Image (cartoon, rainbow, N blue to C red; front, top):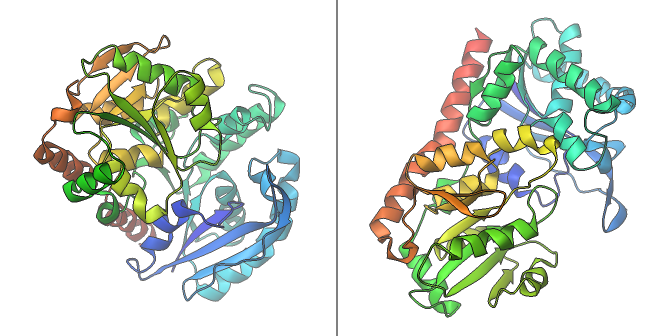
Length: 400
């Protein structure tokens, strides 16, 4: 039996968990999922208890008496994570005859490797999803190159060195892990191709519903603006791109986010901005109606450097599966390399000038057949079927 383990990730209304974890369970018969989640939620809205649990035939959720704030965890709190998690994990492994633990994130890998000390035949897969020490510095949990950051860098090397296999979400991440002297396997995140593939019918319907003209360029950004992506860069990148095209009629479409991005963009001089709160099932329709996605990222501090060169966010994959070109920060090299495969790249520099464009500037003239072809190409690259096949190959190898 194989266990997919997550630790300290809040599961409430988590679309990423639905798309990347829950969706796999029926397709891998020997796979079970265990969520070790924080009982106490602390965020901008305040403090509350998280009492809802995911439960099912193949799903178990256990609440830990810890704060969600501590997903990026100071090392001195690790003993508490171990104390609250390991006894239950031991029982779960023994009861379900677990042979392989697929550990999503650094904390899960740490718990898995502790279990391995007591179950020597247990195989551990580390699936880091990102560079945790740098991410903690980016969101302000600790100082970049400070004591905690350096401690997590040492722990990181230990985690990867002692795991039986390491997964990398991007080729940039694979290179980062190789620079630590460790081999990994590149397996991208899952995108539901049935949900996000381009539909010309959806495009026509949404453009008609929102009264977009046929020659109007629609820029789209999906999600919240914050620590990972900068609103000022988003604005300036659009102005930079407008310099390169003849048609000056455009609308900025923000999908989701409960922030003031819309008002900020108006204050920057943009005339038409729509910020919509959508059901997850409707996002793909609005991507289909758009012409150019935006991935602004951040410029400035060196703490962003490794994260930018290794990241390919779920939103970027969804853009690509929809066949969208991406107006992208030139430092987000992983996304640029992938978009170049189908000439969907439009990159900008620190001055927000477009410096490279594989994509035709005449975005509105792209025929639906081209968009469908691009959508099909990336649907195959990020498809659930292909990701599951690659996971199962590794599981089978470790079970021998």
